[in-house]
Each structure stands twice: as C-alpha cells, then as structure tokens.
Amino acid sequence: MKSLKRFPALTKAGVVESLQFRLGTAVTLFANLIYLALVYFLWKAIYASSGTDVVNGMTFYDTMIYLILATAIFNFLEMFIVWDMSRAIQSGEIIMHLLKPMKYRKYTFWSYSGSHVVMFLLTFVPTFIVVVVVTKGAIPVGWNLLTFMVSLLLALIINFNIEMLVAPICLYTESTWGINIVKETIVLLLSGASIPLAFFPEGFRKVVEYLPFRAVYDIPLTVLLKKNGTDSFGGLLPALGIQLIWCVVLTILGNLFWNHAVKRITVNGG
Image (cartoon, rainbow, N blue to C red):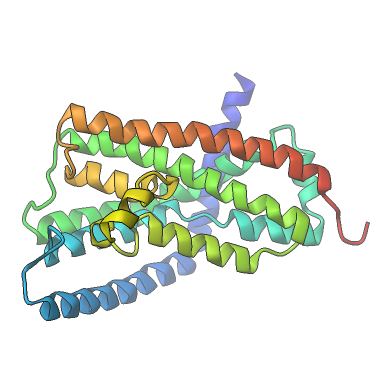
C-alpha cells in the first residue's frame, strides 16, 4: 500500500512542476499552431495538384483531422527521457536516482505522469473539442471515446518503452543527441504522426504495420475515428491486441537492456 501511494504523489508533483513553467507550455502551443498552419498549406497544395478530392481513400479534411489529432497526441505523449538521462549521467545525478527506494524505470514513468495529465487537458481535449465543433461532428462521439482512452494508455506505455530502449545507450556513449534525433524521426514517420499510413506504398505499409511505431499514433487515431474496421468489436480487438503485445514485448526488452546497460555506468569526476 505504501508503494501504491507513491504513484499519485509523483503524478501530483509532475502536475505542479508542469504548471510552474506556464510560459514554456504557451510557447509549445504557439509552435504547434505554426506547425499546423504549415501542414494545412502543404496538404492543401498536395490535394490541389492531385486533381482529385480523394487520395488513397482520404479526403483533404480526413487528412487534416488525422494530422491535427496526431499533433495533439504527440504533445501528450512527448517525453524527454533520453535528454534527461544523458544530462544526469554527465552531471553524476544518475547515482541519486539509482539510490531511490523505487526502481529507476518505474520512477521515471510516474515522474512524467503529471506532465501527461497537464498536456492532455491543455492540448488534446481543447483540440478535440475544436475539431468536433468545426467539422460539425465528423468525429464520431460515443463508446469509441472509452476505447480510445484505453488505446491511448497503451500507446503511452509503448512510447515510454521505446524511450527506455534508446536512453540507456547514454550509459555507453554519454551523449545521444544524434541517436535521439534519429529515433524521433523514425517514430514520427513510421507511426503515421507525420504522414498518414494510407499514403505509404502498399508493400512498405504492410511492413510498417508489423512494427511497434504504428501502435503509438495510428492505432489510437483509427480507434477514435472508427476507421479500418475498429467500429466493431471484431475489428477493435485485433488493434488493441497488437498494442498489448508490443507493451509486453517492449517492456521485457527494455528491462533486459536496462539491467545490462546499468552495469556499465560511469560518473564523470568520480
């Protein structure tokens, strides 16, 4: 019971910490507006040059709804574990984290939970409401919201484990700037966050569907929008099953890699 009480405390601390940096949150929201404006004009030009209203089964508004919600989910899922671990190793602070009574992976996950709560309420919820109002109900609102929340939670766990597979590389290199940039690029591209997977070549798309990245953005979005057969239990179950399988596989791999990598730890200055 004492262990369970630590989790809400870490979440509360994360919420307080996030709210202390209100200017940073405001800058993030403003940057997202600029990004969405660029995305709008880019895809507007793509559809205008295509000579048709439907490309790969998606209209322009379908694409914009998908990408706008993907951006909102990105803000919710975003973590800086790689950067934080790299700085902690270089400063020696990593030792203090390892001495805590809670295991490092568990502590890291729950220490980010507060910022996830704040970003969900400040970014995703308002974005979702605006999209529903502007599109006059293009997004179905019903039981899919509940299944979407389940899918989003699984996506959060998967994203965390991907971060924790990359972050321990810091223990070998002490710097992972380039590796992290490559990781972010791969995740955003192959997950559908930057380009909907419907626009990928068929052969390449089939390969991507077996990778864990799709489970971070594309599956939660298809569940929310009731696409690809997820409007029925028969289509929803395989989608959530894929996420659950990757949660288990990546958690096991992440734990094994962390347990091996932490033995290589060195602290600068002693």
